[in-house]
Image 1: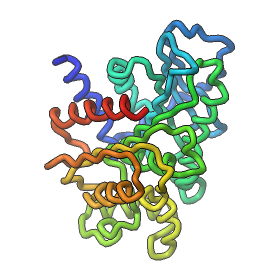
Image 2: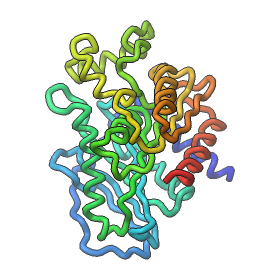
Image 3: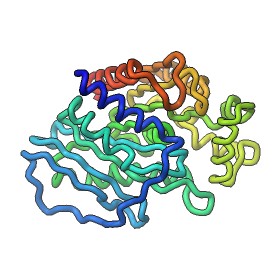
Amino acid sequence: MKVLSKKIKHFTILLLLLFTVACSSDDDTTTVVDNTIDTAEPYSKKNITYGEHSRQKFDLYLPANRTKESTKTLILVHGGTWLSGNKEDLNDLVPAIQSLLPNYAIATINYRYLSHAEFSFDNMVQDIDSVVNFLIEEDDLYNISQNFGLIGISAGGHLSMLYSFDSKYNENVGFVASIVGPTNFLDENYTNSEDSAITNLFTLVEIATGNTPASNPEYFQLSSPFYVVDNAAPPTILFYGDSDELVPTSQSLDLKDKLEDLNITHQHYLYEGQDHSNWSEENLQDVYTKLVAFINANF
């Protein structure tokens, strides 16, 4: 357990450094779907293409002895202020999840970056949906069920919730987990913040989208999980720090209250003294323990 503890700490620190992570290079190779796969053996494939853009690729990891009836898929969504980051940032997490949840398939995905000239939050959410639809269409080949759970960190947590809370998309979503993911772009603690880190983050979003809350509040409302969620949302688990320099405490607390009002199965954890990325080993392990228990109970 001590070795696993050290690995978990390393993996989670790697994941939580998503707002400052350097953008690594994508492998430009493309892949085609195999014709047959031995379902009795583990299987992995990198850079499976799900669209025409160079960012539309994902990696897939399948467990041995999988079946269409029982093998569910965990989709991991990276962060990076919606402007950077890659699925490769999640590579080291895969063995940890496989050791803790050995019967689940895992997909780590890339999505198109936010760009005023090209791609909106809607496009990024559509990328998640494209991966889900790809896996549904190939469920016979991969021998997996049509049940999906989303785990997102930071910007990836925001996108995971935005997808999972939207009734257009969430028919096959069994749960969603957000680790330090923003929930509400119209939160006054964002729009009227005097904190330079939050101000700089929000300025990046405004520049990337070409909108401001004053000029186009509807855009930011439709891009906020807090406003998108309804009573059809899947079970939701939230992990946040009460000293986060980028995601104000109100972000998770307000969403928790709304989930309660909507009677959505949920759990919310706010860790004392924790910021956006530098979490203690004790709290990191607690995140893993609670996440695994939540998945086993609700998915």
